[in-house]
Length: 232
Image (cartoon, rainbow, N blue to C red; front, side, top):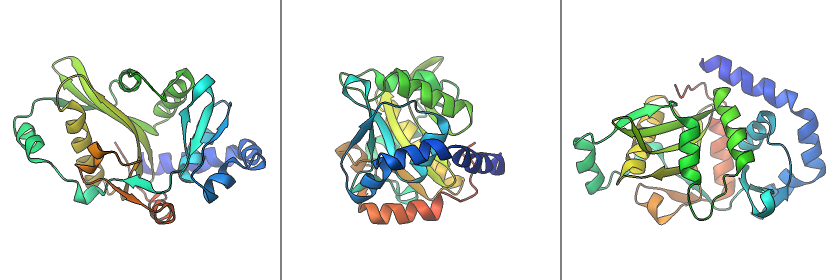
């Protein structure tokens, strides 16, 4: 599974040549390499385009009028995997095993849970695109269950030794925190070297999230994206 996914990535990137040349002609990725500004375009988010974008440190979000904004923040948020901080309150909750952790059993439900907020960057196009990535083995969900009820989780994209976290949600206290802890443990056990959080919020900072210059992020991305790691 490890080698097939990495090989599939390179095959998809090669197959994406036309779309990528089109993007370069629009100076989307080129501009993002020089600044942190947003670029918008309405385009079908096919797997080839998405995987290449992630490999370059660029990710999409839905904007107004269903346009797609492409982002490469400077500074960039990361969560050091082996320095993940477990707050005391969460540590007490973890000892009681309040939820069951499941992987990839309700990916679309997790995405829809993440989209249920007043302002969301997850529209139908984003949902469809990431569900396709999930079916191809690149996008994954970490879920917290209370019995047979999904009460929280997160999703993201795994390439090589990098996990690109996208969003998380909860309907019960600490459900998303426990999913994030489970993700960090899983990535550490499987040799991942980079957990990308895009930006650092005060919430993520409580777990050790930090902001680093984009140049440093791109160096870490380059060092880890070709690693032979498997999320599953």
